[in-house]
Image 1: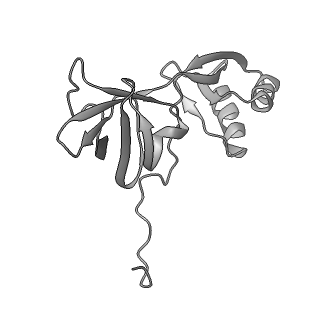
Image 2: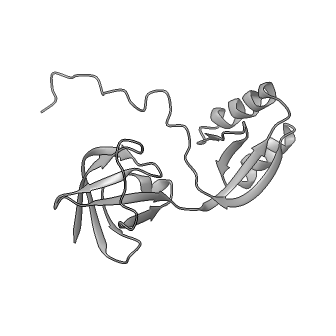
Length: 155
């Protein structure tokens, strides 16, 4: 079984052209330890020191020296199109106020996981919606990269 022990961030490594890949949905890209199956059918043990937020194009360094490239799976999403940046900010605020994950797309559109209640709310706020299958990579949150505070009672 392949044994993935660390993450190589997208842009910081060059994946082999025909190297192994693992395709994962958003929720499965937020792990520390999990039994996975690579796209070639081979089992893969993800065994990282700390939970990691894997992104499309990241690499998983294997204990034997190899690598596996992470691919973001297509999953049910809703793209939200707004009439202006201010309108997008307003819709994004309402999505965030419901503690839902949100991705900001390169063209300024917003993407959420498919949720009929949130999509209806966005439509009620004047956004147009498009349901589709696409990768979902939401914003990580303001504190995602912060280290936990030091505690004297921690082992």
